[in-house]
Image 1 (cartoon, rainbow, N blue to C red):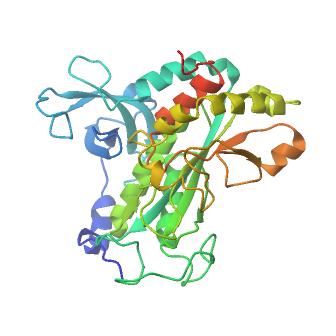
Image 2: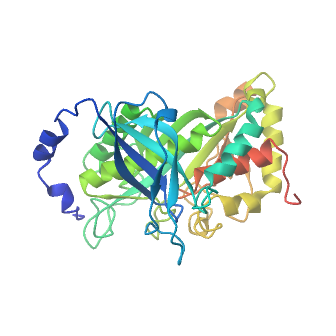
Length: 367
């Protein structure tokens, strides 16, 4: 059996005693930000005199340099609150706050991809573009093996685990459902969750969201996932191919539409956007994982409901393609399309920005 952390085995009843203590009208705010790796999240807590009613009531803060900053960088970084959520771990009136990071010159830090993404979303807001993202992940024990996999071995082959029910098919449902409820309480626009193809692999969906709301909500959903897993003593692994061999990888498929795509005759606008994506396939592959496409080389191989990383393909109700048009959309002639290329560890700011730049703002590789 996979190992769990020692911290998860502490007395949680004792913890609840302290969490239930009155706060005397004060509010605990957890500042959450993306660190220099552009993949990991960090947080720290601060007391406010009263419950904030909006993001404008949350003060800026700072954080020192020992948080994965470039070698030799000594200046403090500024934490700029951008979106507020309820705190499902310490409950009302306490808050979680997603922050942008600015460097000591009050310019966007290197890991701050939200800054440009927000400008792009504002430039395209008249299109009324909607997103939904499907985040896959694998539960992993502290020993580095997928949670509940036989020690030193493998479970049965893929097939019975997707949306499976039963102790021999669903590994870690308590964690997935706890995360679901935490997102609902926090105000994250979580759409659903399900078991995935590989044992101990799960997916949750966030959306429908408009503009910058999409990556903001996905990052907070990821934070909640990591915190829930911390409580259970396991790790949420977002690597695009966490287990080599005949096992599925993990993606972060993105669904996209504009007002014109959703209206009568919208299929033409869907097809036009897909053709623009076809012409910038290599550019999007570079934007769709955290290492310029290198991570997705292990996942986009043409098997396990993927297409080859070097090929661009489109299909209706076909999951082994770059772009999938849902069957209902094909029947109705309007709606949305799904880009299945983004990896599980993608930066949702980079992914959504790339799609808007290509599909709506008309950028090409020559720009």
